[in-house]
Amino acid sequence: TMLIPKKARLDILTYLFSEGVLVCPKDPHLKKHKQIGVPNIYVMKLMQSLKSNDYVHEIFNWQWMYYSLTNPGIEYLRKVLHIPDDTVPKTLKKQAGPPIAERGGYGGRGRGRGGFSRDRGDYRGPRDGGDGGYRRGGFRGGGFRGRGRGMGMGGRGMGGGRARGRGMGAPAEMEGF
Image 1 (tube, rainbow, N blue to C red):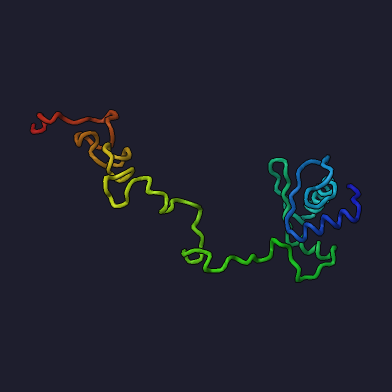
Image 2: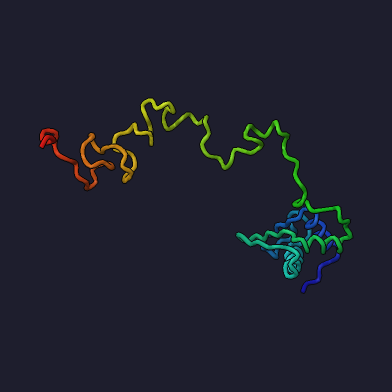
């Protein structure tokens, strides 16, 4: 165990309760924690103690430790810091979203995870089926292999793509036989 000064302990616990989460680099030699202003070793050891009692959940990634409060941790900090029950960490507060008029015309939903929008200049060709485009049958060669689209090179043969070991069919003068 490590003795941590009471002021530093209260600063760390107050920050943790107000935010609900805490980020700490795994560097015990760091003089001051960036957000709290106490030596980083104090933050590391206090969070280690809270984790052993299941008051916080830890995720370790790329030499950084990410801590989030659990429900027993919230109750524990309320008791230690003498905080009323109606006060909650920022992670549990509902964020007020933008007004409905600013959300967009998708029934209140966003546009998803990106995807293609209509203002991309139709880079795959015109949508009205003009001269075709990728995956629209406008290019010769039958599209995807094995899907039976088109007749292959020049309209003759077994279909299914370019000449890749499949028969090319008979020459035009012998098609009648």
